Amino acid sequence: MNIRFFVILAALSLAVAGCKKDNLDDVKLMMTGDPVISIDDYVLVGSSWSLEAGGITVPEEGVGYYWNIEGVVDDNDTTDVFNFTFNENYGTYRIRCVAFSDEYYDRSTNKYVVTVDTAFNKSLNIGEVPGTGIFTDDRDGREYRYVTIGGLDWFISNLAYNKVGIPYMDSDVMWSVFGGYYTFEEAVSGYNGGQICPDGWRLPSENDWADLAASLAVRPESVDDGETYPGIVSAMMADVFFNDEKMWFYDPQSAPSNTSGFSAIPAGYYSQGQFSGLNVYSMFWSSDVYEGAASEGGVYHYIYYKNADLKMNYADTAFRASVRCVRDSSGI
Image (cartoon, rainbow, N blue to C red; front, top):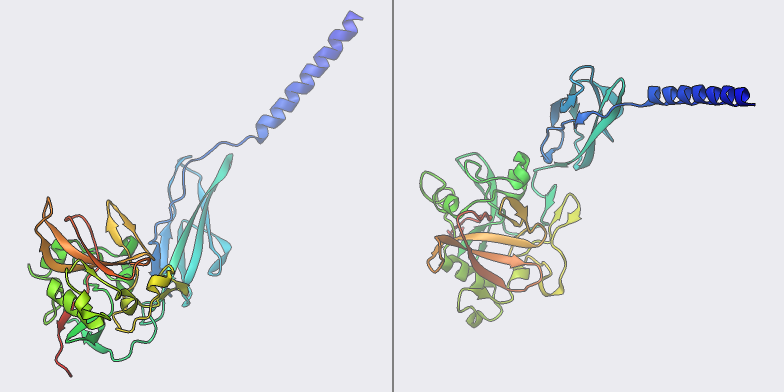
């Protein structure tokens, strides 16, 4: 009886040991690191890219990579250097990179990239704006459309002078979409020590903003303190779409009509190391210094989607907002 028991026990032990060995043979190790996809968040439609694989630190050798982009490169492309060209239509694409190696589990990274068409009224569509002129900035050849409001010509797009300032999400193509985000110091001294606007144009002063408000106000006498211009923002706001998505959040108090042609877009602002306020705020620098601030700062005017009034505030030197340029109208 005892002998039979020990024989059975030994057989079971061998069987269990064999199962454990088989299970261990199936176990894989975990890689260290993640595949790197080094590309801007926003890129130009039809642009070509060459992405180099990397990012895995363990194992140090024997790592391969494959890539795909739905709608662009649907089949897995196994390569260390991934070459591809985006479609000519704007949209959002997912780039996927997978690292693989014998005896290791796969490791993957996904990145979503938005392609944009920078032509007028393509990716950024503000609708028709009657009565526009076109000005070419000699510094970089960039074209700006403008409208006359009262006795002043105003850009209908944000300044995009890229020798100073930053583009949205640090993606170069966005200079031509949302324009630049500038500190107050850059706005007042970013071009040869002077204001950032092109020759013949200026950064709007508080007097310029007051003239704009008086031209749009239903009751001009209500434009008094300069800190709040009542009821004018609907006339300033473009009913704008970005890649076919409506930008301004809706509120009945400030539904965009853009009757002035000013064409404000909710590009938001940059503060404390991040972009904020997209689809919610438009913010534009004035040339005036706010002398009541604890530290030197600049005056800006802003549109908030829930409020019908154009308001004034000030910010310190780290805050970044948009710039619109203005000049006295020639009447032509």
